[in-house]
Image (cartoon, rainbow, N blue to C red; front, side, top):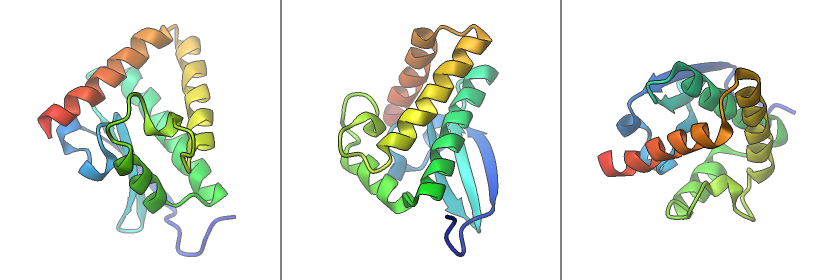
Amino acid sequence: MRGEGEAVNYRIEFIPASQIRKEAGPTAGDYFVRDGEVVIQIADTGNRAYNLLVAHHEFTERMLNELQGVKDEDVDAFDVANADCEGEPGDLIGCPYGFQHQIATSFERCLCAVLGIPWAEYDQSVATGAANQSATC
């Protein structure tokens, strides 16, 4: 399943939203390969639980993409082409990583329930942070 030369290690970084790669568009999380390592960058929300929930989503999505043959370049190209959409590009019909995104979101929702975090509150907070990012970049 895994392609030759695929990065082996994953690194999670919590950073200011303004430092998320512009290729990712306004987002709470991003992933890419740097120096042979998958880097997952999370826009710091100031809330540890929220940061970890976003990180879990990004890890799950990237891991499924890797194992199911979805390339980071295709994810970036789709995200850039749909940066102005309402909501998340991963929710759009025709998204090359749509299935993987939906699975990651399902896990994220389950974890919110386990932690007693209302999904609407969490989702709004994370979405607001991503929307504010475009103004600070």
